[in-house]
Length: 98
Image (cartoon, rainbow, N blue to C red; front, top):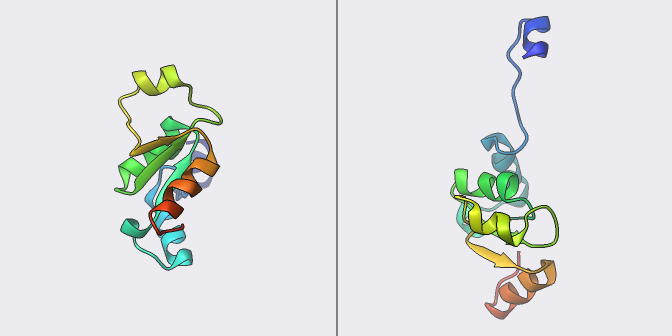
């Protein structure tokens, strides 16, 4: 708000959870929302971002979000993994790799 007031220009917000970030990632990767997923350790930012924009969301329990927070949250990831290795092993076993 202070930047907008000082400059008289409304800023374009490009970070999570704004759609611009997703559009850029899809463009760079050359894929659709159905062909990718958001992987993160924060249910309130990473997983909320994926859910907000219709992208599969995988929560890894290696960082910010605790089990208790996950259970209390209204935001529910599509899958929960202990770590990134579990994500890779899960997807490789299905014949896909992100």
